[in-house]
Structures are given as C-alpha cells and as structure tokens.
Amino acid sequence: MSRTHIHKYQTRYHAQATYSKAIRARGDLVVMQGQVGTLLDGTVIGEGDPGMQADQACRNIDRWMQEAGGSLRDVVKLTVYVTDIDYRAPVYEAINRWFEGVHHCSTGVVVTALADPALLVEIDAMAVIDDD
Image 1: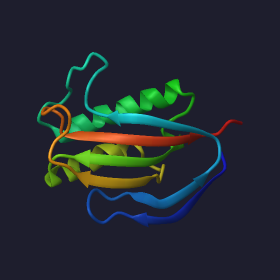
Image 2: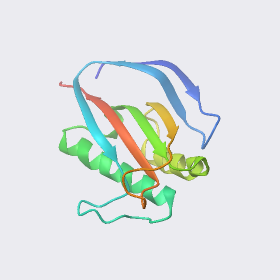
Image 3: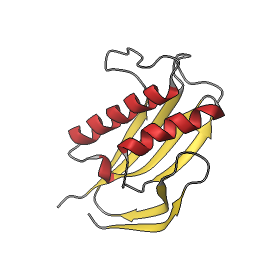
C-alpha cells in the first residue's frame, strides 16, 4: 500500500513507542466501532485490569482486520479512551505489543465512564487496506 508517514515521533507520556502525526494512505478504508475487553458473547476479560482489557480489545481489532482482509499493519489511527489517567501506562503497553512497528496515529482521551461500568478502556481503530 502506498503510505507516507508524516512526522514520526517518540511518545513521552506513556510506554515508549513511535507514532505518526498523520498518514497519507491509498486503498480500502476500514472503520470499526470501539473495541473493548470482551469476548463475542460479552464476557469481560480482565475485570479491574486495564492492561488485560486493552490486550483483549487489540485482539478484537486484529480479528476484525483479518476478517476485512487486512492486518494490524494496515491500521492508521487509534483513539484510546480510558476511565482513569493512571490506566494509560498498562493500556499503552498492551497496545504497543500488538502494534509494534506500525507507527499509527494515536489520540488518548480520559473519560468519566464507558457504556458498561466494568469496562476501563475502549479503542477505536481506522485502517486502510491496499487493494493490490
């Protein structure tokens, strides 16, 4: 896929990783609903553990990307919502394991709550899959 990373940079607020301020990409757009730490049946994974919930959310993103015909390497943007600022470190450690080397754009937001009180993190993802 034709992709240009615009201004790669090292994070300074949480687990170290390289992100991009913007990405110019061509291909098929994939936009998914926010992913949380649940199984398909709604079972919460890692209740009380934001790192485990982020890990499951990333596992879900990986699954939907594969079903869409792509991979995590096609992800260009994540928006990460946490219910406590102290959750940022374990959440981003999980994200960085799943997205190592991807250099996606990322936005982090602290919110007062998510739709289910047991959920501590939600991750929105956007991707562009090359049609070649």
